[in-house]
Length: 194
Length: 204
Image 1: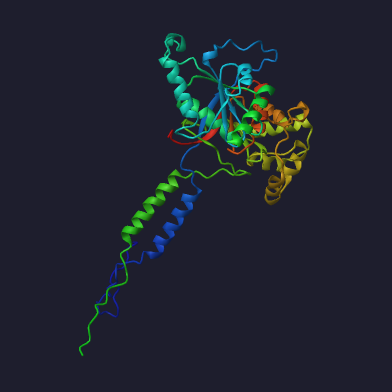
Image 2: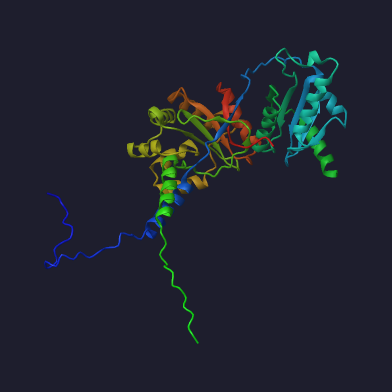
């Protein structure tokens, strides 16, 4: 039926022309690599990851924020030009003391991460240690992250990321208040002088 | 002088192995390929250590570029984009014909004042690209709540797909003022939990 006639009788001579079985694959390889290149460029290999954040429910007549011990409060102010300012304790006290607000960066070795590590260590070695950690072993440190409008989104994510890295369970993103804006302006002037 | 005979080697190489490898790689890339979604703006997300994956469907994406222009996008799972557009049309009494509606449903992110939406939907692909290039994004004036159209887009999107999760995909250079306004808009609607899209990086 569909048999291929091998050795076609050529004038009855019975001599088949021997064909080479080698096929030139160069063109095929070219094509394959072209397609590989195309797919490599159009593929998104790593799936995007997301950071979950939860904001407090918005209640307009929000009564006073829960009382926070001075020792456990830390405020991180995200200033322009990737500068990170921070102070411990109450904002009024920080405003009164010109040395209260310190500047740091997002450097991985000596930036904000070191500040947080040192603070956690300080709480850990405190004689009143039991008061600094809840029964799950989590520190009671509360970090308030406040960014000025001229700061960038990347800095906010970096700050949140530091919270994850240092396993700080209590942090919040809060709108910056006017006195703190002045604090940032004052500290930024100091940073420039240095 | 006797001639030195140079042995003539064959120039044809055996390509079989190379061909095999090439097709193996090709198969791998074809199977793992997922086309890049078309986005009107280039966004470089900041990196973080978290590794929570983003769901593929039922996602409302807020795209914010480095200049603070805001776009909104939702996937078309269960025809949610159709309902979304219908909700917008009835709220703002827009006139959009069926052909233009189809363009919207099959399209991607939008970032225009609502008044330009009918024109955007009816436009040809090239014209749409041009409009996307020149747009200032969705107006989100925080002082004037009527001018905050992101709020309307969000409300209608969530009405169209109640399971939708909100993801913010912002450029790391996006001004914080815009981010704050977007987060405030979400918070006002009771969307307290949302995700920030990041690319993964190690801690050190």
